[in-house]
Image (cartoon, rainbow, N blue to C red; front, side, top):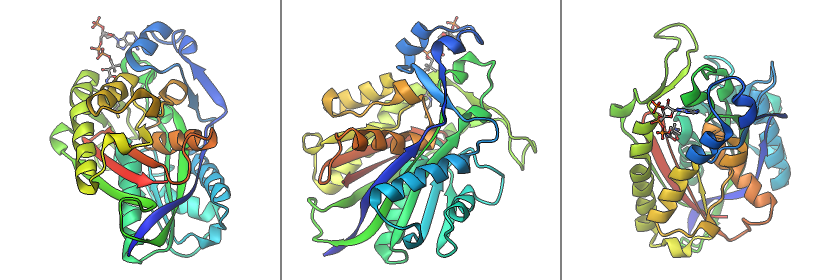
Length: 324
Ligand SMILES: CC(C)(COP(=O)(O)OP(=O)(O)OC[C@H]1O[C@@H](n2cnc3c(N)ncnc32)[C@H](O)[C@@H]1OP(=O)(O)O)[C@@H](O)C(=O)NCCC(=O)NCCS
C-alpha cells in the first residue's frame, strides 16, 4: 500500500474580456493569419482593470472545490503557481487562502513560470505523500497581460490571463501503476537559459515590474527536446507507455510545439487536449485550464491515465503522470 495524491475535482476561471487576433492587428503590425499559422492562437482573455491574479485564483479554486464537493475548510495546503503575483509580497496564495476564509494550514506561491503548475503539483504531491497535509488546492493563476510590452508583436500576441485549480487528497492506494492519483513527477531546471525568456524588471534589480522579453526561436529550439525527455522519464519510472495514455494535456504555449512533441512521443492527435486556440499561453494557468475544459466536456473521466507536461522560463520543465 502507498499514499497517492488523488484528484477530487478541478475548476477554472477566465476573465470576461476576449481579445481576438483581429483586434490585436489593429494595435501592432500582425495578422490573424500569421498568429494562427505560427502559434495556433485565435484569441485570449484579458483581466479587467482592478481584477488581479488572486481574484482569478479564488474563482478557479471555488469552482474546483464545488467540482470536488468538498468544503474549503477541509483544505490544509494551498500551493499557487504564478509569475504575476498581486504584490511582491505577501504571497498571492495567502490572499487566496483569506478569500476562501481558510485560516489554518499553509499557503505559499511557487515560481517556475510556464512550468509552475507542474512544479506546484509535484510539491503538493510530495507534502501529501509524507502525511504533512491531507487535502491541497493546487492553483495556476496569471495576469500576463500586465507584464506584456503591448508594442512588441513578437510577444504580446502569445499570452493571456486566466486561472485553473485542482483539489488533491492523500489516499491510500494499492501501490500499482493502476492506482488512482499522481503516479510520478519529474522536474528540471537549467539557468544557463535564463536570459532567453525573462522579465526585465524586479524588486531587487530595477525596483520596477518590467516587461516580458523572449528570444522566441531559442525557446522553440529547446522546447520539444526538453518536453520529450521528462515524458520519457515518466514512462521509465512507471513502466507505462504512450499507448497506455488516455489524455495528453500539455502546457498550451504553441500548437506547433505541442504537435511536434506528441508526434515524437507517438501520441495520437485524438488524445491531445488543445486549448491554446481559445486561451493563448496563460503560463502556469494553462494546464489546469485545459484539464478543466476536458473534464467539463466529458473527455477526462475517473480512472483515465493523464499525462501533463510544461516548459518555460529559466528554463524550467517537467512532467506529471496521473490517473484521474
Ligand atoms: C514566437 C514565435 C511564434 C515566432 O515565430 P518564428 O517563426 O520563430 O518567427 P521569428 O521570431 O523568427 O520571426 C520571423 C518574422 O516574423 C516577424 N514577426 C514576429 N512576430 C510577429 C507577429 N506577431 N506578426 C507578424 N510578424 C511577426 C518577425 O519580426 C520576423 O520578421 P523578419 O523576418 O522580417 O525579421 C516562435 O518563435 C515561437 O512560438 N517560439 C516559442 C515561444 C513560446 O512558446 N514561448 C513560451 C514558452 S513557455
